[in-house]
Image (cartoon, rainbow, N blue to C red):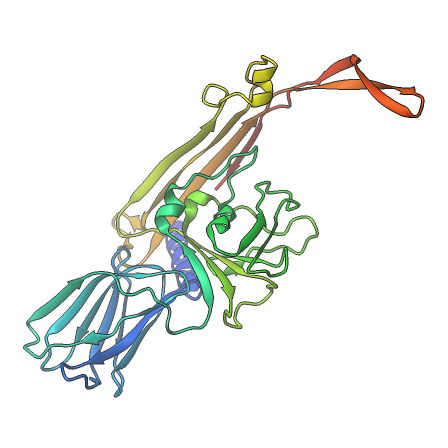
Length: 359
């Protein structure tokens, strides 16, 4: 049993190390100056993730420059200290997917024991790179509903909120024939989709992406539209970058159920005109999420070090049977008219319920 637990902990640690190397990470950089505007060299700059406790420390150069690189997306606090200067703290600095946050700080003279605390986000104006992109706000990713048209919900649909999008996005995980869209006038079908920095594009004429990502697991959604760096290859259009949720120092989870049935749905216009009752169309997209620190009683406490995030989703679909008319055609001179009044009708039985479970 102990050997299994040690193996599990080692696997999680190895996964954590590899995840930090992905291209979804951002950075915080800027200049530290004194009250006169002169650069301060040798000052200590520390960035700490408010959710996971990840801490990165650096020092300013002789020109007062600093850079906290390779930061996973999230909320950070930035602390700056130097001899003869008051300690500076900035809380709530948001680092978005593949973004560089500019944070210039002017220190105040005083004892190190004195604190200057600022509780505010930094400017999200991108000044360090030339790429053009759009980030869908986390509140929209969490709260906007996605269509459930007989298939699992597809988080790539959030691309419809990005300026420059043209086309349509499908939901069927086994067919990409309805994924006809482009960004900023690029090549249709040339968009690459990344999940935590790894491409999920497939070399197939029918299936362009592996649509196995649940919208409930997406933390942030960003689209790089043009002028992005050479590290992004395999794209003739834009880059869709999905950042997945992660565990934090606090245990957290959710339970969800997106239900569609004839009790909740309105009848169609065609059915209303023909006095036809609502048909059976039951779709159920449900599951749960759970995340937190890896904790094994008396053996390992992963707080500030190792985390897990688990998602289970299931999808059930029960459509209505369909009725069709077979119209006979009869020629009258050169014209041919369908005689549907003499038609024979037949019904295709309701298919069995489809049920999909993934994790």
